[in-house]
Length: 157
Image (tube, rainbow, N blue to C red; front, side, top):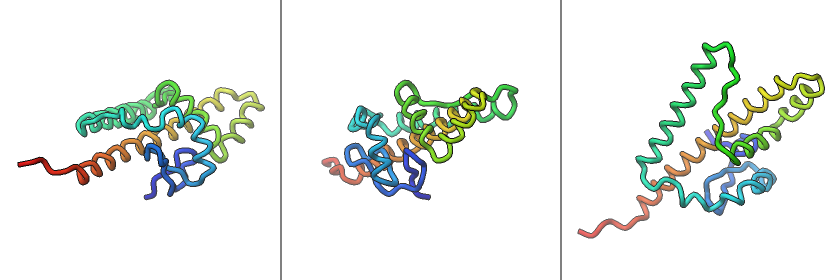
């Protein structure tokens, strides 16, 4: 399965040349993402240095995702989402608004006075965008670690 574009989730073939952490299907999607990404591009160097730390972060992400999934199965109120924090959440909300079909549906719900339904749709879409970006981040970090292992010189005997 191809890595999804961080903007529209279509199969991606282009990668950010600065940090190599994000994938895009077209130059247009890359330009749209750059508005937010330019502030963090290159900060991947500040990411967890030890594979165990990365594995623990990924395990925690999957644990939280599973807790929310189980909650939705049994709870009366299903308005619980897994989102990224701070500016990344706003980025995901903006990206979700641009997904094919979402903007039109949001406009339809808002004009019909169904703002709660519009918010539910938007946060559900943002959760999907954030999940795709988070999973892409973990995969990229694993690839970077594997690449470093193969290019690092062997320790002296």
